[in-house]
Length: 180
Image 1 (tube, rainbow, N blue to C red):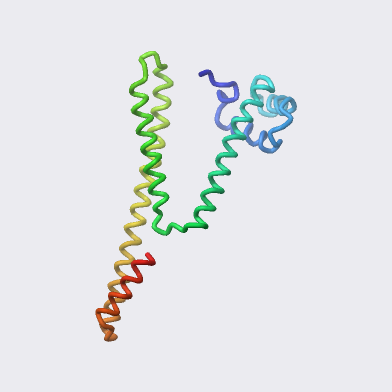
Image 2 (cartoon, rainbow, N blue to C red):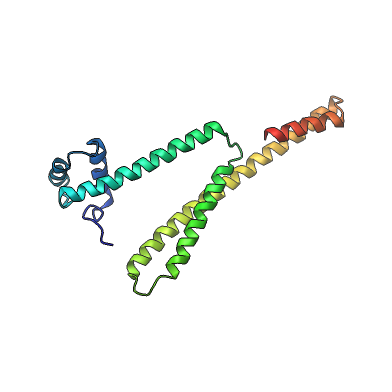
């Protein structure tokens, strides 16, 4: 699939085009096309190409906004102190990337090798990001569990010194397990 003239622009130019589209409310494409040529010196083709690009950008932004809102609503409705949702999301994305890599290996020989290398590079970058997120999340969970275990040991020591029975300590421990 051929990339549009806008998609062929350097990242910083595309970012400026994106900002102009957003600021204009995704309207006035004839005017925007001329403004981009004049101010940025970028050849974006005609206004219809800019409109197609703007529509894709608007859909992406809408999807991001909807996902962000859904995540906020879920977090409010069902707090996740253990961060199980993040673990699930990381696992799902890792699975999808793995499946995509397998599909790429099965591609026909006719596939453009440069395109294949580009896609593999992007996948590798995303895998590295996911791996860092997973490692950071697991390190955090381990640190939290360590603090919980230390606090429980401290509580048991204080309780033993205060003459609290094993039965009462077991009830306290069970209650703490329900919270954490």
